[in-house]
Length: 251
Image 1 (cartoon, rainbow, N blue to C red):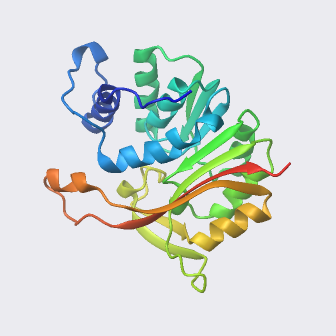
Image 2: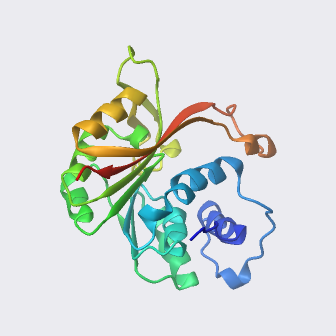
């Protein structure tokens, strides 16, 4: 069955809940956007529309779910259940409020650190498909996160990640620090966050080593054309190399 993304009004509504920090009923909100922002549209098309067989009739675990919109799309694509985890409280409050407003069944959102490996191990016990989108590059130990997922009964993994370098001779991991307000996985009380961006070779090698068969692979440049419609931004838009990988466990 070919599916399509939910109406833009739902994305605009959840964006308003998060950015305005006001939890207002959907009945009190009127939308005006005509389409998804280009960089978000690319993510949703690549991660979700391109992997419907891994979503429908599967239990979905979204690591670093932010406000839960990808979980909402997955629920509309026929997921058995959706679980989202994020280290920050406010996005999780938005996700719970949004799902309650739309009366979406079979969901759970929790505040937690996905590098708490005992927590991640427990979450993976009730998941068929793990989504980890625009998160891996912010972690301190991406290999151990992938290892923990691999050692569980999870059968499908969908990764979208920035890559530091696609040069086979370059470093496999690039460590860096950045402002925590730019990192959806950093806790609210930390001003600086340590990230670890992988390169293309790291992801290919680690997935194969841990028993995954890559079924889809796409590399592209991520650039937000919508940046030019925004005001009061202190930095120019960044052009990032992104890789999207879907994989299943070797039988």
